Image (cartoon, rainbow, N blue to C red; front, side, top):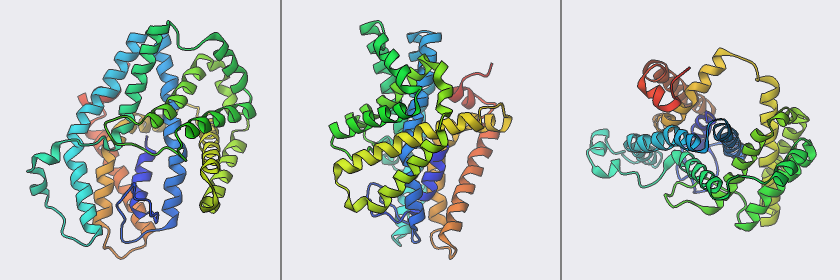
Length: 354
């Protein structure tokens, strides 16, 4: 979740001509295009895989109803509250940056907040993943009620035999990713901020959610993610380099294959690396993890405003990026420490600490 700060600090400085993100600062660099593309390749698949893992934890150790209740309180309610609370700030920051980058006079803060339109969430903004995660949680719950189980014993045995072998694990997950991309005729799945769910995106992230779910059911093999984790990550990095280098020469099938290799190798490789090097108690990491939800919720409009304020400053684009990144992180962590961590907001987002 915290990587969102990096992406949204870099995206305005990306040299890409892709208009799925229309804002472009005066100074841009290919470095930020590569950075955004690289993080996009694995960040959300990892998020949904981990979400599936802990969804299964609640489902199995509590009950299906408790799992759904928890997802309602921890995901749907924060999504709805912050969608409306953040809407005027997000729309203002977007309009402000758009005007500044185009050399126009931006709308004033007072005028923007005095119009009703500024408060209506016409889209999901950066909170789209909470929306999709809750839909997936409901689908899993309903499926369990209809069938009395989520997966057949055969599928669980197949998963265990496949996933504990690093080669089979990568091949199986890559094949699953490719199959969904092929079915929906997509080279990859970008984020969707529309209220109407995108079936391709839903199916794609459901696959990673189910993978995480099965991994919890067979949690005795979690440690096998550390096997060849560095080598698998390097495969993902090499595949990403090949895609960047030869992207214009690839047809749709080639892009589907290489994007699947990149996403799956980076996802399971990076999880393995974290299990290897960070699976130890650390109060600083715990603090940052606890703050991640709040940071993701509020960081977007802050990063946008800072990049707009720096647009005409005559310094290196890399310095601008670092100022936006560090400035946004500092503001988010400071607000978390004083206004969220030990307040009702912290309980609302993360629950009571036991």
